[in-house]
Length: 435
Image (tube, rainbow, N blue to C red):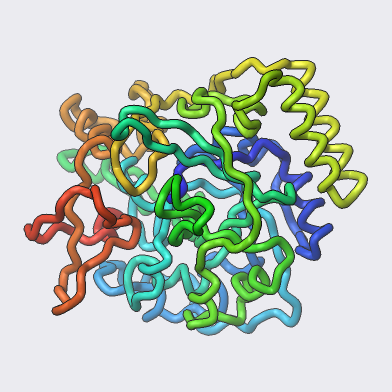
């Protein structure tokens, strides 16, 4: 699937390049609002391109469509009523959002493990009616911007993992098909035993999050993994169709866009230092097999420079190249990234994943990982354990069994090597966000 990618460029540079490829950008975040790193992990604020529609998505806001089956959120909680007319001219925007989708009906900040389950959405899950992605796939589609993505090749029976970086051969940015959502959490009790006097009021702050859609790997990448992100060509009709707000109902046309990429890609081994969350270096996206790393970096940026269409793009690339030579090839660690990294053996995604940092005494930082302030040590350990992908995945079954058809998780692969599913009737993935 997709658990790590590169985004070591500024939002202003992305805006310029999109406009050069006939992708209008009417609004964009400040460069500092988006994390710039060659080692982008879930939980960070990435760059998303979407139609400028209301927070409830494209088209009118239908109460029935806004609350999927199993969602306890009542219709009378809607703040906006009635249909909204589509604007005569669609505006598009780049926006900073957090990787790991939290559905709009979520009442309180979900635990860390639940968010990690929604960094990807399977294309075959979107083909099914209903489910947790139902509203998002119809009204909240987006493009996730990246320079390329990482995947780890397993060798020696999984004992050795070699990171590979995949990018477009023409040097253009990668545009992943994605879904986004916006949520406002309600007030909560810090501890169920506390009185209402200690009730924490809900915040007016809006939280924007996203997920990356995955599909079967194409022939070129099948040696690496059996899943890959859905990639759409810059400035293509496919992107215009995917983002078209007038298409507010799921259709075969939209589903047909979710397929393995048939363009030219480059895939090669890179430094193992990329495996640790927080490590950052421009060398992470440069082939590791090189006699002289500096020379290899120069060739890498030279090729990117040739592929750049405009003068401003070339200026940005030259500035980045200069920065590489000035700083050298030293791997730096982001001091703001406190999370540790955990290896895992799931067939869903071989990328080492971040786990929550050691809990600090402040309430706010604990809530950032979905952990309440007054939890005891046992509860805290349990929360971290949920996020640890090395543990066997919790069995996921649909509430209703369809005869003659296997159930499938909306975010899990279910391919060979996955933990065996039991029939104990576990909760649906939507229930993780109803707490």
